[in-house]
Length: 534
Image 1 (cartoon, rainbow, N blue to C red):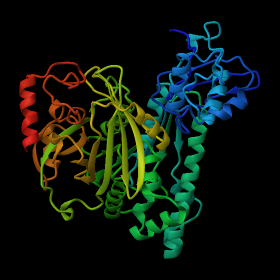
Image 2 (cartoon, rainbow, N blue to C red):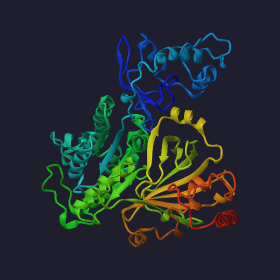
Image 3 (cartoon, helix red, strand yellow):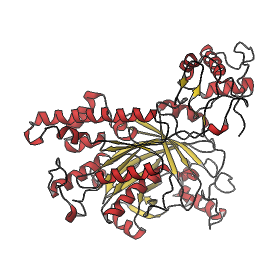
Image 4 (cartoon, rainbow, N blue to C red):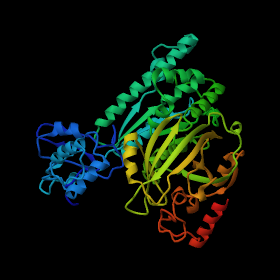
């Protein structure tokens, strides 16, 4: 590997960079509190000057694209012997000049003599997953199995206890609470839960390896036990919003369906001192808990369509798939993404399941070094609140195409927009997420401005372990589903967003596997013309 004699670029991570005054451990450049998890590499033991703490204060918030560009233009990417007073420096902003001056001093010394390539390592991952669901769904057992599985792979695993169990085991009984006391308890429960989680989240930042944080229920679960107007009052009093609590706080939500819903003979409250729900109440709680999380971008429902052992394997596989971990040799029933073309107009809101959530979604594709990899930014909003994500779609490997999504701060999102791929339109969608027949669906409607081929397009997507025939039974009957288009390059967002026509377009992606479609480009171009005419 060549030596690093230039700036540390946006998205990279430094670990244990030694200075003469202190060791600066685990700080990450320009990517918020946790850092940008998908960066390519880290730096170790490559610093020799003595201004560590002072310079750290200058650059810990990140070197922007503008600043990085100025460095490269001024000195061809080489920070050594940089003179901030040079009249040839292509920027007159004194704040940028001051920051880059100190940053240059900090990185001066990363030469062949003191850079140890054996100590280069990828940034660690911190993955926050919520196990939720009604009583007797397998959450406790699932936690233990998930913990063992990832510890065996070398991960550090933290298990956040269920806050409700902690409080209820202290002598609180719902039957003894007045209505006002019960509502106050729910608000205090959420506060307690978030504080306990925060302790584990912060501790994970200090660990020098990959960390999986398993939360026994999450902040949105409280909304399943109280009226909607009361929940909105709690949000308002505490300055919270659902986009932050549901979408931004956790990477992945897994709903373990209660045995009361589909495995009734196995439902029991005997092994849980705080569980008193009867079968009917348990089924109702299970449904409300699932509805509370509708809208999260990574939401998996693990139902009771299989035996319990297979159910646990499906849960672990769902986590592995989102992390891009190949566990097919140890787990079965691999979940796959299914996509269906829907014909409009859509029916009225009243026919959609209760608890459906609507979002505005904006996608931008970014420049990549290989056409076989797709990278995009996503901004998703609801009621004026937004969450941001960076997604890398890797080429097919061992029969599967893996998408890895990383949460971003608004600042990082805005910085990365400068890497936008100009061969693509920005994609605007209205998205409706809903839960039906224990299956989580997302309905995407393309919006203007867009290429004429996208006008009026509607797609239904879901992740499932079911066969096509089994899934067909669960599809919403109130939608006019034309056909399945999973894997069809003519209906991929990447190709639909191309600015130029598809025929003879070198950017058109047949598949991430690199194989040719059975259809010729003429056929594909004809399909494009039909889409435009629809």
